[in-house]
Image 1 (spheres, one colour):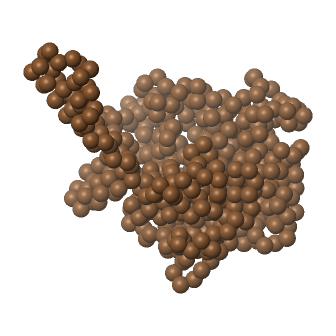
Image 2 (cartoon, helix red, strand yellow):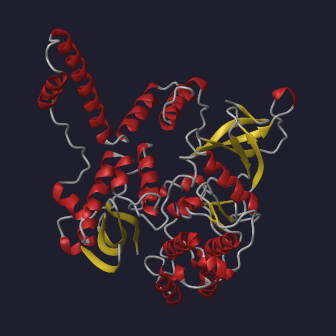
Image 3 (cartoon, rainbow, N blue to C red):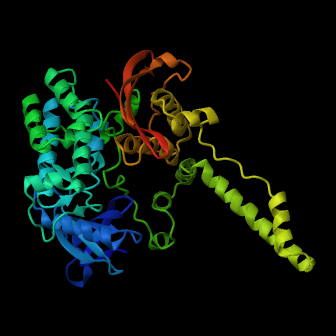
Length: 489
């Protein structure tokens, strides 16, 4: 597909779980792209994305006009009759990428990022809109370095037709609670990555925010947050890193800051090769199609082999177990049909019982954890859970398995976004991070603070010949403890 709603698609800028974003130009007469026309970003939603989610995103973006909210320039339909959005073009560098290319932020830069986001959140709530998935991966920058909030597919509305809510109505609306908590977590994560983390004003602000967004429940939270940020520092222009520096984190000891490098918040890095139509119609995952398209474009056998190796490495071992079980099951079914034809007098129940008794037990998936470590992850001790998760995290990096991280990091958290991107970079040839923790030395992990299902664990990080203190922010979910953030001090 090259044409959508009067736009000629040029190349894909990125892809995410919900959509693909393409660079496009307006078509002239006869279907030719106008060389002098302004380029735009066209967002095409995947077929499995519900129309409810698409409608929510369009509704939210149409209610708000702000330089800090992604602007919709046009709404059209794709070849399948589904909505497609024409959006303002934003930089490929997002918030997670910015911090991934920098060892730290200036406190003034943090103010420049956080103040507009806090005010935008208040604006959304005033219009009865809950973003409902606020996080570092939803923040991009425009050409002037202005933070722009994106990703409104999970938005929830508290009013109809954009009606305005009074402050007391906002406070009573429970649907805004998760947004305020997410804003507090985002502010805390960014502040912990600044060069003024020991400044008393920043320390006081971090204490007020709390380890789990405790300040988010206070009246006028966003206004107070903005005031305290300005008390900490004046705003300073954000120093966005050039694309060539985005992989530099891997050569600095594998630092994993509060907002470490990730893909474009709603997109993977752009590809240069155009995916042939026969690939897109094959129904295969995008990452396989991308690999094949790059190999075809370059016609390099070594590149094809490398891509295939990397693709296979990212598949979790339990997937192969599932394939093996299916193959064994298929063979058993064929044998069962053959036995049925040979012995019609044998009862079906007896045949199934024989197969069940003879079939070998399926092996357990290799998660990198033993039974004892897995018990720690499910237990109540965050220190033991942290040690087990850090071991499994190291296993994920050794095997270059992205899916393995689902058992380590909290889904959609800073750590999850950062570690996924780190492994993707390593698959492309970047140096492996040297972050490691000696799991045999129990004294190296210390519980700093715990509040309910959230815990902060301090550790000694081995980075070459130097030891630097690090902290692991843990959260206990229904599946057990998970890492939410990991950062050095």
